[in-house]
Amino acid sequence: MKRKHPPTLAGIKAILFDIDDTLFPSSEFSHLARHNAIRAMVQAGLPATMAQAERELEKIVSSRGSNYGNHFGLLVRRFPCPNPSRVVAAGVGAYHNTKSSISPYSQTARLLLALRERGFILAVASEGVALKQWDKLIRLGLDPFFHHVFVTSTHRGSKTPAFYRQIARKLHLH
Image (tube, rainbow, N blue to C red):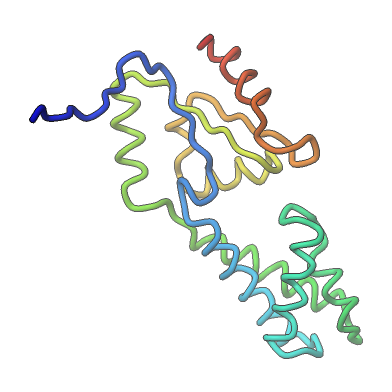
């Protein structure tokens, strides 16, 4: 019986990576950050239990998308309170403080360095708000590994074939 050889990377010039749940566990981060935000909002006077607020926030995120900028403002409208600005500010602060805990998957930096050393062009191909995607890369300490970062707006659609064709043209891969 002939033994199969593992696939090689011959002919490949560039490797594209997404950020969320590829370079770091963003789903875990989002869950933790929202949980921390809600706890701070309840402590600041949101008249809801943690479970009630988490359910309502999930509905808001599902209907508005994760990049919507006023999740906590909408949450406060669903649970009116005497000082909504204080409650929203507490949530925003707790959410942003959680960002200090994000880190890449354990082997990410080692893999990216090895690929760069082998001469591959490394690029990010992600969907979302460019400023938020860059913020993640910088906080993760991974931005120096990438030659290029491409972000497609969620308003123009997802990562379509046209998005990847545009990347291929810019990287001269056609």
